[in-house]
Length: 342
Ligand SMILES: *Cc1c(COP(=O)(O)O)cnc(C)c1O
Image 1 (cartoon, rainbow, N blue to C red):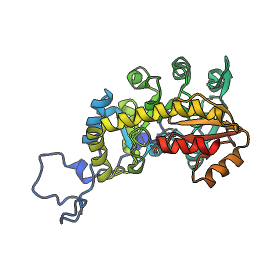
Image 2 (image 1 turned 180 degrees about the vertical axis):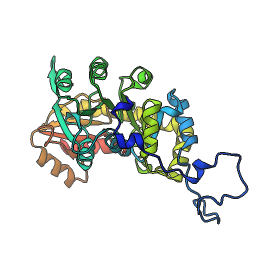
Image 3 (image 1 turned 45 degrees about the horizontal axis):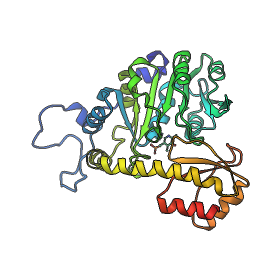
Image 4 (image 1 turned 120 degrees about the vertical axis):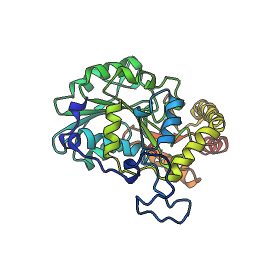
């Protein structure tokens, strides 16, 4: 897989922080990083390697610390994939469509061609992977393939057999974005990470863990890929507050988080059961995520009407004809959505 890296990245001598250089026992005085010595709680730089947080995530997820990259949101990991693997103006990335918009924006920022392969209806199931078309779109400059499962905005998880065919057939990196995996009955690919050296899995604390404001996203990959991601990232990409609060939430809030997750899953079912009784609703797509893709008679009108009642949803009609994407809210918020649409 390292042959896929850009030459400049392979040759890079990474920035070495003061705390990287010194590894001995705790000293009496840290005078190595030009920090202010007077305590403000935040006068010290954060751990650039995020050792404590990685150790806990490794234990919880059953992987080694060396197979974890922690980013300033998944967005950082998405951007890094291009910077590591894609030569601007030369290489390309392949993605399903419709999907999460950041893959394309990051491609454009990095001057990387972005090839879209539409999802297809298979055996009556909408929004499925066209495995043959995805593989046929690849050429010798195809370095990345983006698969979001469960997919945003369609909401469905893709069959493991299809994803496995892509991992085996594509001679580049397959990035599997599992931002919504906690809401899905399909299992995460984390248990199979060691089988596929070209697999990069993205997860995030922004959705099921309810920590979007802290900006903390994860990538799981081979030790080699993670080590290059660490070399290219900003040295102090995860600030002190984020590192300590995510650690604390993982240990103290797991039960509360699980109970909120159960509520969201039962609310998703309730919305899916009740929304069809609204005359403006034409179709509810099955969801493995914390949102529903809802086809309505007039998406622009229904969007404005919900807005007038203080409810913002996402108009996705430009990528999914007729569709609004509605995030599952609290039971009270969901009641308002149902009442307003009725
Ligand atoms: C919400 C979301 C994320 C999370 O992004 P963060 O930068 O970690 O907040 C990642 N991927 C997809 C597909 C998403 O919808």
